[in-house]
Length: 347
Image: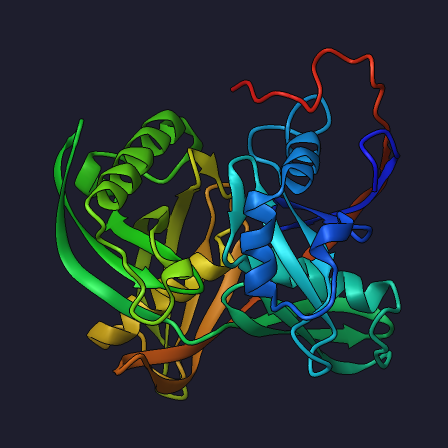
């Protein structure tokens, strides 16, 4: 890939959140002998990878909330593909909505063979580990995708953070990335588009304060440290008992990640972190379902698949189900005389 060469992408969305797939990734990211986690570190240091990321994320080809991924070789033959997730500020360690979109694309494109009726597991290596996108088909059509994540766990409880809206208490959990979680009401807000500016502002403040304090050091891999996003939540309705004795929780959230980006979906890895917190208090038990709604009204359904341990602490394996849809294919061109290359971000 040279800087003047056209770049082909396949664009999808999961619950309203974009995911721009780049099959022909920068060559230095696709060499032999590296894990996907190592490729992410390489990408953060690569002028070429950062330039292509900025080109595809920034205006006029993208926007401040664009998201996507470079396809790279998996860690070994046990997975179908690897991916490096990116956003306007860099490369993330995990992405549930992107995993759902990749699973749907892999089946829809024929990259992974699937029956007309049934479920097909697409195994994907991401920087935080190996995850599974189980693609359910009926009559040759993709019905939904279930993302089974790496083990998720609570990192810290009741961390006090000073904000422009007063001091708030947040919990920190890992769902492939580290998230700070708090009720939106604690900051005097509601999860809705009319409160968007305030939600973004307080989300950024919390993230920056916690990272400055070193409050989210991953216990097993320093590369997974640091608050990636702030999740502000609210309960839509009280838990609903079901005939089999399980319950359905219905909550709404907005995830403000990186430097003020807003997830239009309920956030896949953030939902896993939320499940870990709810499991820790017993509010969500095996067999229960969390109906997790986004700021635009799209829904993920999440559950605990099994309790486990991670780094000597209680953890859960989560499954998050959502839908993804293709939005188009793009062939982006580069004019070397364009003074605005690789692009810009303007809110």
